[in-house]
Image (tube, rainbow, N blue to C red; front, side, top):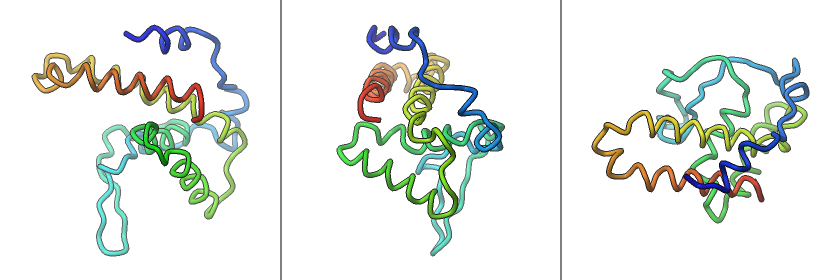
Length: 147
């Protein structure tokens, strides 16, 4: 395991639960697996699939799920801003959105690490799991900087 990410995890969180879980942005129904593999495109329509992770959570978890695999891309900051701008074209971003996204990106990555470890008996995960988990730790490390 990577000591950098783990030591930061054990430190104090920057997430202010009182502010972030206020009535304006508190728990609501979220997809919780909102990545490009779960979108179907039919003409002008976009449809979501794979609702098995759906439940109550913070909307920023859906943002983080959408961006988690983009974190190390050279255009990540533009993608992040595009997501914010798209959201703001419908409604204002709740307070704390920009400041707390990195924390939710880390939560998503740690959740994916847990998912990978739970599948360690899968031959594909045994073959590719170490690289997958390492890439998630790289993403976590990045979130302490520019995310």
